[in-house]
Image (cartoon, rainbow, N blue to C red):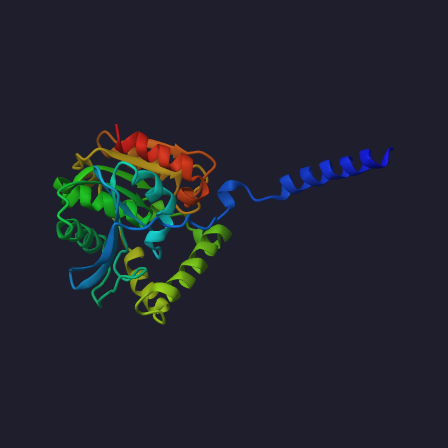
Length: 281
């Protein structure tokens, strides 16, 4: 065999081998895209805490709510896209990121009231919510308790009962990698950088028993809502997602292809399109 042909053949074999062993997109945990420069940011005094927020762009308001242990900067790609024609608000839930916490027990009702108070602080009458994981649950909670504050809810990887969570989620490598990364970010940006373990212990009390909404609770929702799941989600079962979509009146079921719990960083373009297709129509 000619030397150049041999080199080419070896290169092809190497490429095939690496493609076989490369992690699938839904197994990867990319770094979020950098956040654009905010038009304004600060800390809002709500319900006894100082809640970090930032606002970008002008237009119909959209509030992006991160997941448990997370932080606002996960939304870099979504902020860059949506702020072209929306007022985009990001914030960090109590105890998360740059926000403070109190000794009050965590509950989804309490965190939902924090976000409603933030919208009032910012003088935003109504907003669409894009919520991920705990953020999606908070969006559903607001739809139940404060529907007057909402236009639509895009709830990704949410659950309405604790048994909607896969029992082996903590053994998943991608999910474990996220938890480790979240802890590193917390130590860099939190006002209490040495209290991550205490914070996790405090919020774990909520996760053990909440949410626990009944069918009747869900049937009272009249806000247009999308129930969204990556087709390889590590944490939330497809069966529970289907149940939510069937039980909430008029809910739209959206399944994101080749994506997991972390779809917003794995497939930013596809995620942004799914969001826009729902909140802008």
